Length: 189
Ligand code: GDP
Image 1 (tube, rainbow, N blue to C red):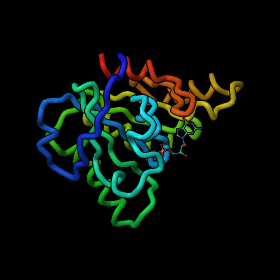
Image 2 (cartoon, rainbow, N blue to C red):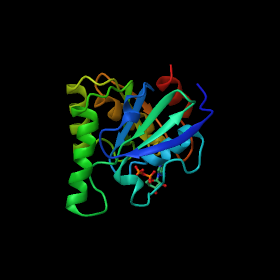
Image 3 (tube, rainbow, N blue to C red):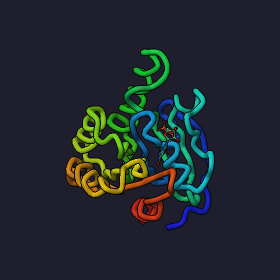
């Protein structure tokens, strides 16, 4: 599946008609700094659809992009470490939890992005478990695989996959643009 068009629709901070207009939603979630913006840009072939190391503003809301006039890519704020006050972090955690776990909105897929070089962190495991508990259709993207030494690549990939459980894990590098076709094919079947 080739992404021909990607348009920023709007930022949402809560209930919004746009979530209910019938476009299938594919949500992207990950710890701050895993490269979520870079993955979205690599996937859509755009340099700055999602802001890399974003300005405040766009990172504090749920950003909605229309893809090929059919799907919504739902770019959720990063979890875990983030710049800003404790209040801001709490507000963002609540926004994520509301959209994924408490709202009535359904996702065709939830893409959990982890840092393939660092590996699974405690907050990644918590998110994976919460998604599994709420029976989401999860796909895991291990970004930054370009940082793994070739001699360690297979071992690292096995370790990453071991904790992916029943979910498919796609090794990815937003920097080298590896994994882009696999991810696009998996998302937009
Ligand atoms: P976000 O906070 O998750 O949206 O992360 P960003 O997309 O802003 O990226 C965070 C940092 O990781 C930036 O310095 C990126 O250049 C870097 N980065 C993102 N993807 C990759 C990758 O595939 N490989 C490497 N080596 N660095 C990456």
